[in-house]
Length: 531
Image 1 (tube, helix red, strand yellow):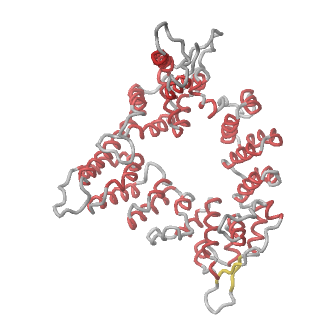
Image 2 (cartoon, one colour):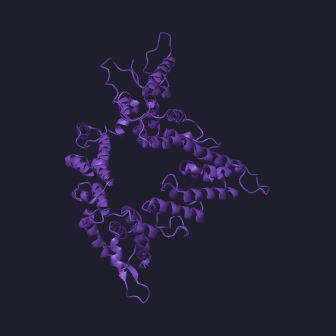
Image 3 (cartoon, rainbow, N blue to C red):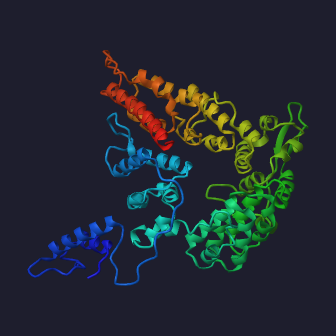
């Protein structure tokens, strides 16, 4: 009898008394023993990477992968990382000084792909199993595995995710939308294969991707049109405006909203001009007072059909007023350069510093923040962020989202701002900010993080509260910092006054030892991949 692994697992979980196993017992053998025999046989077959099928023609040979092989030391390292991927000891509260190999696998895969290597054929089953268990590994694992991974995935349903996650890649040196295989995938492939193909073409040829999408746009389902339209975010340019303007008349509200969002990210678009005209009628500078001029706001009194066509959602969320909701959407879709001209100022910092009348500042500045992130405007993001030394606003009271605003700044400036924030306020408010910083961390940021951890240790803080930041440091600090951090691995004496958390001294010492050991291992991995 032909049975799948899922059938056997289901019978084992439910029990042979409730589910007849898909096996044929030998004479005198009970159902449970037959199930275990079948599971043992199936395990060997799965490890071999090929499932038994009825007699048929042999599959075509696996495609050639012309990329260079891994250096021998790097190949052995990959074997160790794949063998340890299910090991215990990971997690936020782990103890011991040994590096967490599970968390190093994504970094190793990214580094190997940057060198252009291919995975060893013998390790492809283990690599596909690892990516099946962890979705975050899939893009890098499939890139390293190459075309042979897709060949294997067609022979084993356990790896079918590889076929969903990426269709056949266009051949190097060809127009990706003109290849016969690409056209066949676009016309006949699974939805996920088509999304992956469109993203691939978009990276190589933005206009070709848009033309490919236009060939089937009228016949696509609304939910599919939404996902395809989202693929145009990458390499978005004014050349996309005519297509997006047509999408503003789409019968799906979500498609219209996405098209409007993309058009508002193009400050020179016709939609941005329409939004700017509406916003100027609602926000202006009041110079009638005796003091400093202030911004006056008169929120829209209605949401007409033209506003809705341009992406304004008429119904606000629960607890939000209609007029403030409409105003926020208008302002965030308006090119930010509009406001310097409107207020008669020369910079974003001057505009942000202007007082806002009648309590409209949170709504106005929140919309400016969203506009700065959407338009990737570093000057406005910088002005809205303010200095890193300013006290953070109480939880739930701030209209700023520093992590999102930081993403619009250059990497070096981003790292410098977060380093100053940590030096001033410590690590408790900095976890989300660290996640948007480029890896490896720049030297000032790495030093600020380590200094803050050292201060927390000296203050007798609970080390378990900082395990998340310590884990980030293991993955993001520059490996060259290992020697400088060696001094932190020493085990100090326990405080005699009873202050500090019990066992904290030993935990901190282990954590710093693990940090240094991980940095050195990352340096070794880098050298192994360099050959």
